[in-house]
Image (cartoon, rainbow, N blue to C red; front, top):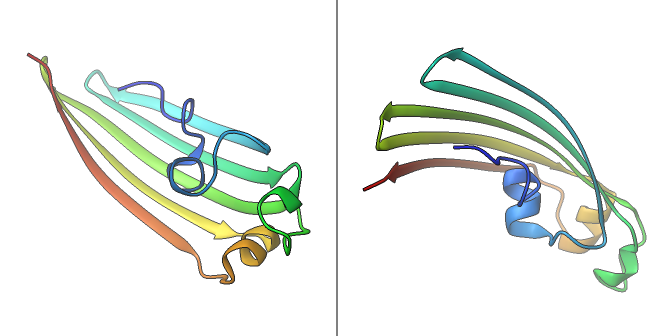
Length: 116
């Protein structure tokens, strides 16, 4: 699999919480391929809201969240691959104002792809 971190910026914030507009996202990524069939990715994101008031009237802060994603892509066979994702997002002041909460968000996913 390729393209992690491109269409949805962040497995939690970019995929489930915010759209790719009104958003400044900063990404630092490390990727490695220790063996031919395994890709490993570690991404750190910092998300800022450009116009906080567009989220809600009570949102005045710009810092929305910091997120770390660990992704493993394993090509099991030529036509079958597995991807595992672990992600954590720590809300910033804008997220606390927007959601009314401040707990850390966790996400995990196992994705299987079979090509005919």
